[in-house]
Length: 414
Image (cartoon, rainbow, N blue to C red; front, side):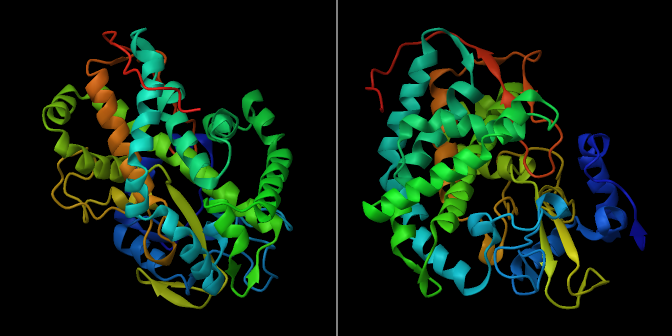
């Protein structure tokens, strides 16, 4: 087994071919120490990734273990952020505080609550498809897969849904463009203002609470106290990003697969009951949230390797989900895969709290597209996936043409 490696896993060339590199690591050294970026562990096999994800006490979300709360939390993919960067919501909170926060969020995100809002989801989906269907052309990402989750997320949080594009464009831009691109730089320049605006929303809901998710957060005690406006803003940031971009990415990749695999598309059109299972397979294969980092709180053995307290551990969900020891035909989309214990939503105490939302929204949206524009054709020259990004995978734009249809006639959702 290889003892150490020295590779820049954020180099664009490495990222472009990351699936091949992950396969090499998984087969030769699935738990290996990478000396780049100050040194950290890379974990790529299913069993080891699952072990890390289950054990939140041993593998914490905090980067600097002995620093005060809110300071020196890890950054993306094993590279720490600068001191003083506020933590981002649910994903960077551990212990009793994390458990309390999930208890506040859960009633709004469990399957029962999402299904109770399904009629509204169907209305929003129908209206955005109406905006395309008569023309026989549109962009399945920017005209549909992005706005529908955007509207639903903001409404759940008690924020004006007419602002969906403001938030969707921001999170889409930070994932869709390279740091050197003007679009990325323009989006990043808005971070301070947007964070401040979320803080204003927290203050408004504190003074004028409703029955929405934001009101529940600001009025509930978390670990024995009310959260500050900045802490609430971090949580809102985390929830808005998760609600918008991850579901958008899942739907986009699912529709891309069906648009390029006509046999699979025909099977789902003929038997819509297969769609929920297909969504699970799209989650496994594409894993919209690809990776994250944890920090060891104690010395521990993982995959036969000795990890020391304070070591940073990088885990790849997508590498685990392509492990042939866990999934037969792991590198092929099998829309009716009989057993699919994928890790796309994580595992353990930090498992994605919005998983029911993503599943239900994605299944309905894919079904609606197949019902109303079953012959859509993707323009291969205009289709563009996210550039190299170890954290998220998604689609920037996906123009399509199809046989024009009639509007459903639903009223505007705004």
